[in-house]
Length: 391
Figure 1 (cartoon, rainbow, N blue to C red):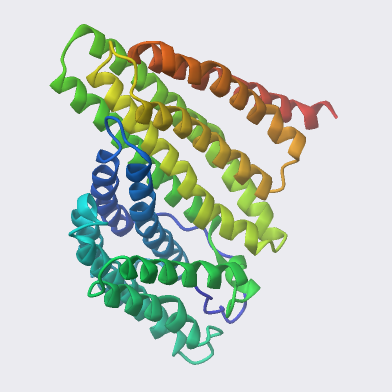
Figure 2: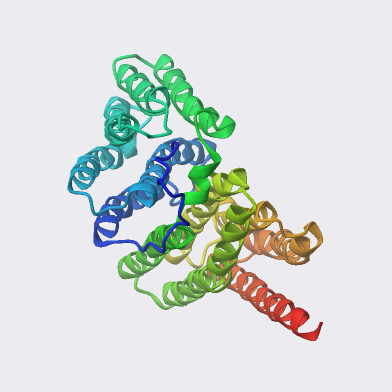
């Protein structure tokens, strides 16, 4: 995410909706999420969880930068569409390399990451060269071109030097975004809130779709009565998470982003668009993997890795939502009102259930926890709406 080309009259951002081009682009991420989630099935250890996070973050970062690029420039310019379409094979390469992305295919993953950044560089550098633009030329060079070079060079460097270059490349982008070097406040004021909320929502749909896909495919391979019960309960978990996000989460995001934009809080917009959703979607992906394992072996206790995935995924989902609410300016007391019950129910209920109960029952406990938290969210949302009216 870079700076933006200021409109001559500094008009308020117009309503913008996701177009077919963006939906087509998201097809690549369906594959990426599916491939990376596969490594978390069964009994993943610390290495598998670390591999997932290391390989998923660059892909997420590319998607987030794409979203902001289209938010600023739109997706109806033929040249911009051509450049962005040119990055799709790069993301496909990253997905194809992911199963051995830290091993024998690391070079291919690195080249894919470099390719993506060259595409973004071409788009932003073209804008930086236009007369009257507020974006300094050095910004896309440091944010896109230099990381692309580091990723490309790393393909020829053996481990562990290769991964040091990866870390430097990602740190450079993250730090430049944190310190907002070369970016004006007008950039955040020009973003379309409707488009950002819709795009993040669509990405969450992709991840939830991977959850449903995992449950159904696993049930097809293990078509027994216990697996059917586990699959039904797993579907309840996914459906409740979807309801929490789309009924309350998107409304909260629209309200919070609008408030942050009106108050000139660019950092809140940055954190809740670029960083925190990664925690949320990572949590859903881990839950999906654990649900697939439960459907495959419903009568056995979940293996330790799947316990971590299920319990940690639920906590990651709600922790991300809590952090997003705080960044939008919600009071700590209000956030703790629903986040503390999440901790209690997860640690005192879900964790013991995953340790001592068969997998199908542990999934049932997860469904009960998520259902209870959804009802709590509904109650607090209704109470908040009644509050101003009563006053």
